[in-house]
Image (cartoon, helix red, strand yellow):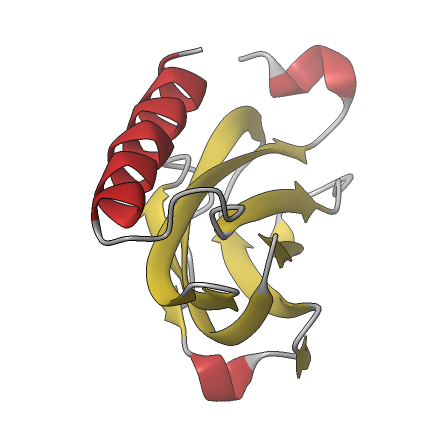
Length: 144
């Protein structure tokens, strides 16, 4: 809930600044991000995908940063750059991230997606947070 509130506040502040620059009446470009991670039955390499999608504009550039990861599954890299995207076009970008699960457990991966989104009133920087559940081991054991 805090993440959604923070993202909404950031969008509201950005929107106010956008309108103050003379873009009144135009839809403000924003960013939507979502993340998913594969479930593993035992420790190993957890594959995660982060999808960035522009709202009311076209994606010009994007990257993703790992804000936090479970202690049992640290990221192999904490940032996926624009050139690392497995898909990138005006409609969005997909980024692959890998976690090295050294034990069993259940935890949360928190990602920050950053992008430049261009709309009718020009281009602007945007960001959005995404959260994915990381599960390694059997569901009964993952709660430990």
